[in-house]
Image 1: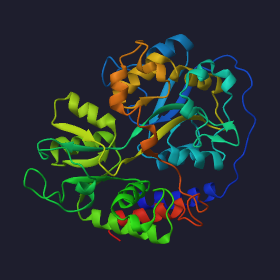
Image 2 (image 1 turned 90 degrees about the vertical axis):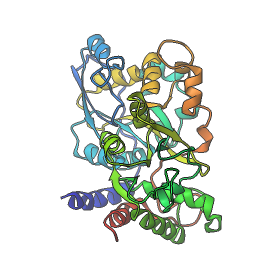
Image 3 (image 1 turned 90 degrees about the horizontal axis):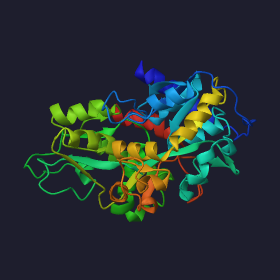
Length: 386
């Protein structure tokens, strides 16, 4: 069933990426709140105090607006695209490897920034970011951004790992044991970019300029590295909580991960830390985007405005280990975050992160690149041992 779903997704993605970017009519004024808003979101992005009491940015919004917040968690960008294609949702917190597909596939509508009073507080580096702005039209509101970190068990590593090689190549770790069967990899085609990022550093002769823009030879090298990694991987993860359980109970000691898992495990006093190795890292800049057929546009706009409030941005930044899209959230004291905390999360490393984006055949760095639908089908093959 899983492979059938992915096969259907390949067709949908291929069609979406060949579609034309459009500009539908945008909302020009707000009316009465409809009473609810339905959101597709990454794990940990929309909290109402159920995981930890201190982290709740839903309850007061519901009380103030009368809009009940309903959340559908998605663990990969492909899941988000599939859910938005199905419909029935108002908003999605889309990463850069999904946002342009949603625009090209006509699944999201332009956002009227004049109806979002806090727009001016958004980081200038994000306001016109190419993953949500097309031909000067905004298709979303920036939410959070950050790196994909290397999470590791400090008992297995006597010193912090300095290279992603610990998840790509068989090696003996600091505890004297092999890494084989003790590492994980992300269960999403965008992981091809992590392999390409590794090759940029270790095989410069390949000439890779961007991990999302690969010609046939570069792409083949990335797939070969992923097939090598397949022999080491105990599980391909996509559920953040299952990954945490694997680190606690299944002997996993290293994997690409999100700061969210690192923070929760460290908070439980588990021997976990994270680092960005010498090769650098891919990363995500997530955008709240509105479905083209949203049934609750007024509540959707109220939520987008709410997401830019400094205290929400501050607390979410602490909770997820990410960087706020509103820089003032680092310093104004309205939430839990501090300037030092934002520095730790990488607020000053924006230019060092290779943000997720959807690979297309017409690319900037070379004449022809391997498009995303091939990443999807080939990565299924890698996971399946082909």
